[in-house]
Amino acid sequence: MMNTPNPITYFENLSALGITCPHDDAFAPDGNKIYYRYIPKGVVNSDCFLPTPLREDRATPEGFDDCIGRSVSVFDDLDNMLNALFRLPFNKGKKKTIAVLKLSEKDGVLKQTFENPSHHSWWRTKDFVCEGVTLQEIVIS
Image (cartoon, rainbow, N blue to C red; front, side, top):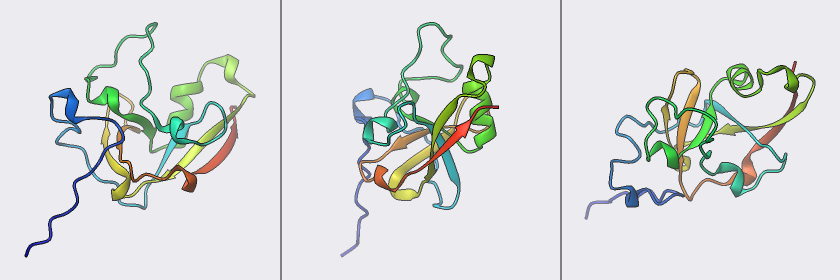
């Protein structure tokens, strides 16, 4: 009898989209590379890893689709993330809490998305455990 791998159960209902999601070119993280995510309230819980809502005051990024709309934004370079999110002068000197994630295959799949080469869309699985996330406090310079 052949072993069949357990199907991946994503946190978001991706099958309801009616499109291939995650995208065919998404990849499984290797468990070694570190990814970063801004945690606005400074406390980690499951809600910190929900899809980033679109802002009505900004243009929709090129390449955005409903599948990416169900993903979580993470970055693989801390400086690029800080520059992308906090580059405006009013952020200088403010403390920000950053989640440091070492994602593995059981946590979902990723795809590099948008113009920033360090930005990734992450389709999180229900197996992801946020209790293992490390927090880092950064003062924006």
